[in-house]
Image (cartoon, rainbow, N blue to C red; front, side):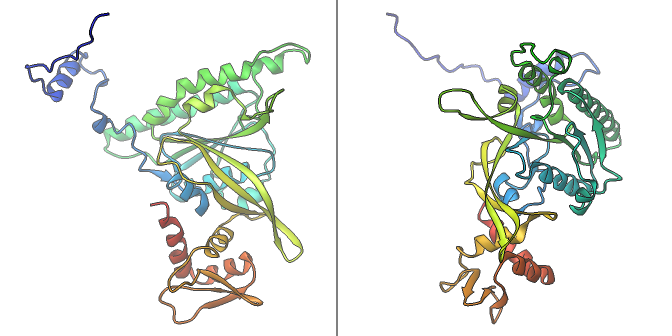
Length: 361
């Protein structure tokens, strides 16, 4: 058997920049450069984020939905995927950006969407009947953003944030499924279409600094252990940079009244930061994600100083212990009471939220 030898270092020193210049010289004049150092290309740059509207998810994702990347939110029905979509649109609009919603489910309550802070008069709705048509709409949005980006770059300006939302991938049939008879056999037509189209758009989304978030559905495989998977085959697994799985964990109650439900959010994949442990958030019916619930639950187990917790129960009332305050602040025994208190004292909310988010740093 031949002995393996390591290649010897070359005695001829070639600077990487000289090699790069040589490659660029092979391009025709006027062609876009296809070569750059990784640092200059900033391919992996995810410094720009769009807030999720939830402290828990901002902490879990490392700051919000990453710009230039594709994100999946997967859950069973009724957990809160559409609410998170609407809150993402509201956050994008607050930044002066444009939000486009590809809605194939057609089940939105416009008044509820408005209550979450969305300017529905500025939210662009792209209607689609099947997966192929949904990707056609996404292609058109990307093409327009590409043209506007090139135009603004000539003026040395930056385009506003663009957010593409798709609600939902799991609720959209493939064209073959719509056109065939109910008893026709279709072997994963949706998965093939999704994989092919995601492969096409992932690079263009990065190039144009577009944020794309799509909702997806869970299902269980047949036979054996009945493994829990998300719809769409390998495409969502390969071409997303962030995969977020949500599960409903219980009811939120004020007294005997159920006002919402708690949600466990876990990262299934992240290429935009280090892995982080799951976070808990609360969704209040008719009001969306409630950050006071997150801070209330976190504050009961995390301390400030001298053995005190942020939130302490003393008989009938809870107390908020704030560093720098001479006395604890009393509020009624629930996250609703904490929410009312923090709404009146935004400086204390900023202090408490800052301490919560600082754990991720």
